Image (tube, rainbow, N blue to C red):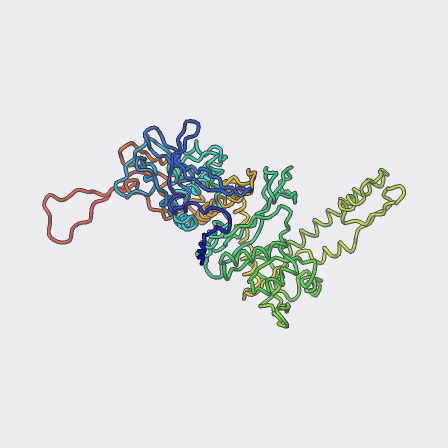
Length: 615
């Protein structure tokens, strides 16, 4: 009898060897990678190619000199602290440069580099503004408590406001001015920094700013076009270049808080995007960023039936300017009797020298299913200016006379008209008769229908409010605060040097706009303080002059010693008082005596003597 034994042998079904399992710490082990005679501290990153094969690439965290000292690069400092903590360095590497960047234990901080004497007043001042506005704390949250990346972003935000130069000069500027970061921001590092800023960072910043916005804040919504040199950007479109430059452009929407006097939101759009098409997108992004209970103030560019119904369906509180030549506003104007020169039935405000009246409107939109959403306090605010009507009539009549003279000249000269549509646009207040065969002007007359329409609405302007208990004068005053946002755009295109976009990639553009937004918050705060301080307005003609006054303060650092700051003198002291900033110890023009009495007296000790020094 034969006995057969069956032996089962395990087989790898996939046909591939499993190999040695990778240890968790392996991707974080630092190795020394030599390239062209230079040594780098690197980690190996596994990348699977299109052919399925695994390849390894080196990620450099810094260089290693001949003394085995590790010198971190931007990649190291821009990494999250948790990621840096996982790196496993060889025991023989000297990590003094890495641990000196906020990782070593704090104690008596002594300067250990070359002796320097740099300007410090303007950056010290903007540091205080960043703390006062909460921008610095918000950036720390956005970048996961990474102080190096936060300071790099603040340096880029300060730089154009202080010196209005190109970022290609930033690293040289850092040698003359003490900036928040000690890392030299060369053009390559500037590019890497801007490209590292993501959409997640942008939304996190909005959420941080939303937490600082109060309930019922008045927020102006408007857009501005920015010309660009980057012809590879997705958003560039010709649109309408207001500066009449042969450059393509993008559009940036800014929501500016008229309550806190700072921008709270921005959005990048294509250059040919009309304002009326952006409202739904803006409201959706504001909702996602956590902004609640805002009162939006928009101009006539955002007026449309779709937007009106959107406001009603979303219960959005709005103050918006509307056109008077159409719709329900024109219907109310036609009912007003102007035969006596004074609009019958309208009230008068002596301060603004305007007649006004408010009309309640009923409007309903379809909701989900059979539900109907009624408009909440939809009101028309109608205003009439006698002086405005007189000026409008005078201007219109002057245009008519000039166009009549031009038409008579064309008819007399018997010129052939090559572009009839262009001529009609030029002589828009006339009716032209042009012969179809000879293409000559045979007759012309005043367009009485168009003239009467303009005459009917001359001197009138209007606004609408939704969801607000606000009389017409209060609505007009709040709407008039939009002038602050126009000044905000002036800051962006002036002191912040953002009138042109000097970026050629999408990632760089998004990063630059994020940094510009940070600078715009700081510049807007400084401008508001300057405008509301009688002393600063009288002494300085602009916000740039305020920063120029602070620049003479210097920070002096000598090897092995503590740094010290030169005294605050003259108007520098008054600027700090106006902004409520505390002058650093030892720099104020007041000295407190440290002397002790030779024979102590009984009772309450006397207050130390103080001496006021010259400023």
